[in-house]
Each structure stands twice: as structure tokens, then as C-alpha cells.
Image (cartoon, helix red, strand yellow):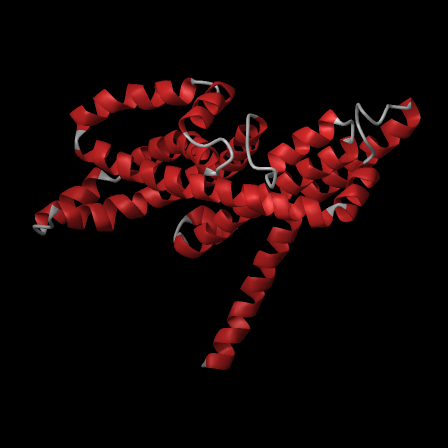
Length: 272
């Protein structure tokens, strides 16, 4: 039986891997073409280095300055990860409370939207003034503020998207409110939650970098990018941007992997 099961699973796994490979091919082709056009345009139009360095020069600088760039990137990544965790947990908790108490939600939702409507550049000096500018606290707080609203709104929508028929069925079995929340509302909300977490994972890295532009430790990636740009070392500055992009993509992929493990029953997860 086990041999037959493995034989039946292998074609399905092969087909799924084939679909995934085909999905990645267009993105890979576009990426390679963009890099080739970038490199060729600089040589063809004699674009100055301070305007746009060559991709090859950026990669070379990333390797040459790896002992400086990657520790700085890790420092900033920890700030982004802390803000991502705090903002996401707070957003999910707020959505849970708002879905339970509609009047409280009506009062708090405009405040949350107003807070997130403020540009992050305006928030940065204020948070640096509240906290020590050289400590990670202000950057963590900034990332948390930026992650809070998308997670809260999507979680709330997911919790409120539960099927009324399922809820009525659970109530007919005398299920408590907590049981309905756990077995009906939470599973329905999980795809929405992970969608918002993927958005928040990118926003967290952006918030940490922007916060460091307005004051941060000399070990931070944002400070390093700003200082290198000020002394016209644009290759290293772009290499810092490359490091930030790689770390942001890594956090996004970690959330995507967690989604595949947790929400296996969702149709879009099974088919991907």
C-alpha cells in the first residue's frame, strides 16, 4: 500500500513542482532583462555613476563591503522584525476586540486610519524625539505603526467573513462564542491574515530604513546608506539598498512559507 501511495503521489508532486517552475520563469526572465537593459543603458548613454551605478559595480561593492554591509543589514533587520511582530500582534488583537464589540470598533477605526494616514517621514522625527534616537526603539515603534493598520483591517475583514450558516449550525449545537470564534471565524480569517502579514513584512523594512535616515546607530543600514551617499560613494549606497531588498524579500518569503504550512486547506495554497 505504501509503495502504491508513493507512486500516486509522485506524479502529483512533479506536476505541482512543474507549475511552480513555470510560474517563476516569467519573473526570472523579466528580472534578467531589466538588469541587462540597466547595464546596457549606462554604457550606451554614458550615464554618470552618481546618477545610476552599473549593476555589476553594485554587486562588486556589495561583495567588497560585505563585512560592513551585512552586519548593518542584520541590525536593521532586527528592528524591522521587532516592529513587524509588535504591529502584527497588536493589529490582530485589535481586530479581535473590534469584531466582538462593534461600538468600540466604530470609535477606534477612524483613529487608526488617521494615524496611518500621516506620512512616515513626519512620524520619524517625532518618534526619535520620544525615544533615544540612537536606540532601536524608535525604529521598532515606527515599523509597528506602519504594520498595524493593514493587519488589523484584513484580520477584521476575515473575522467578519465567516459564513452565517456555519455560525448558525454551531449555535444549534450549543457552541459557545469562543468555540465559534476558534473553529469558524479564525480559520476563515487566516488567509486574510497572511495576506496582510506579507504586506506588513515589506512595510516593516521600509519603516526601519526611513527611521534611520532621521537618526540611528552607526551600526544601522539606513545610516550607512545616508553617510555613503553624502560622501558620493554611490556604489556602496546602492549596495546597501540591495542588502535591504534581499532582507525584505527574505522576510516576505518566510511569511509565505508559514502560510503554506498553516493554511494548507485554502484552495490558492493547495494549487500553488
